[in-house]
Length: 58
Image (tube, rainbow, N blue to C red; front, side, top):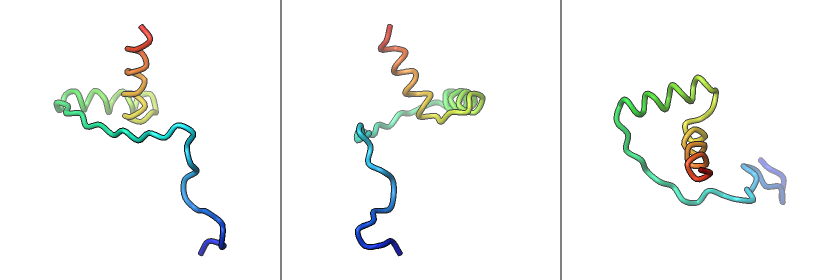
């Protein structure tokens, strides 16, 4: 049991992600996403966020 006054769990983020979205992908698109993420040792979320950043920086 945690000591009184001690908080357990994840630390609070300075910029929390509070806006979930759902995306429908074909089997081929999902396979591409998974392969890219695995090859580059990142999560699928990181791949998608990187794509958003790249599109918006142009």
